[in-house]
Length: 461
Image (cartoon, rainbow, N blue to C red; front, side, top):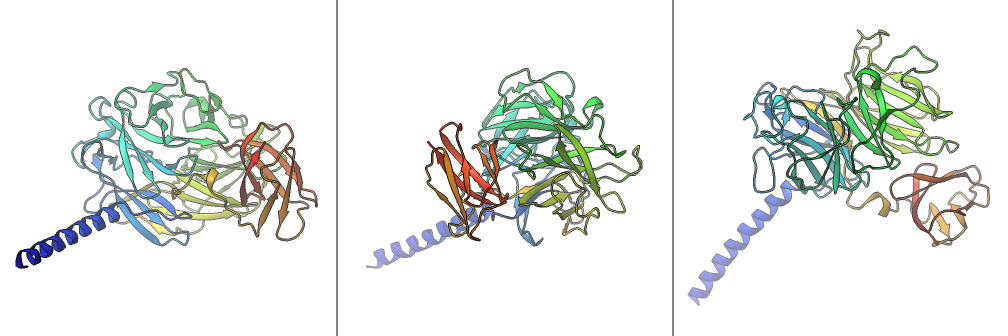
């Protein structure tokens, strides 16, 4: 009995140790909360930031601005989990993004131990590989993706992905670079001619876009068509950016950008917000801030600038849309800002004054990119509207879908149908009956959105 008792006591201690280890692992991979925002923080606060490889963190904030958690990214290699650090002083780096399907955060960086590599962005990529981090909604981190040939002796700045299986990266040279998850060597470089110096990259409406402050490509450009996977690809500045219409406001220094769909009469994204870190020394004497543009007659038109009395130095931006209300969250090196524009399509923002910051970086740290928290399930599989708010029948459907709203009439409401890549394939202003024609659409699964906020999944047969 004594031996049995001793064994049970030892088993109890072992179980407790396993429990503690499990708790520690859970803390290291704490899940994100949908609806929150995540910002990149550079530095642990113990010393002034330098150009050396620097410890990097993800800070999650609630929509109200409360700090929820801080996640440390690896500062040394451990098997296939590679160190992911940033340069402490390059303000153009560490643009954070969420994958187009909503499931992952994406962050580029350098495979260097914290403090081990001075002037890390100036190193050869073959010696200090550039690395892409993918972080899931449950906090699981994958940093196994290396780039050994691109962004050599310069910065890697931004990354985008449709599903987290392949990546588009941009930086100070090489234009757009394409690699699969787990890449260990060279990459597919889309173009070797201008513009090769790019700042951020994003997927919208099933297409690939980049921002640049270089030469004839100051603004936002489209890369190829759809989501390309082979070289070469052509980069084309969006119409209207070369010669902004109706204003003397020049695009000073574009970084992050956010597309949204505000007009049922214009297919696809038709309003664009751009984080601009330009200064008062620019050609028009204006501070940077958040620029608003609208797509009018197939050309982008500048609508106005949301700014502050002193240059806010914005570089990161993300947002969400509910009807005609757009909520934007923008980041500078020292602050996070939240601003609402409910003016809608092709008019000046409802506010031109950037509000006070809702979060600030601490001493010897700096903020970089910002993105919405990742989701546990893909956007295409998330029915965001309850049956009581939005009912559809028949579903599956064929040529005509009837949309029923809780208020009793559908008259005047705006409906949009998108494919699973986010491309708008049908829009309509609903009649009182709520009937919407789907005739001509290929059979498949789509997302129906009413007034930009109520979303349901539909099957067209």
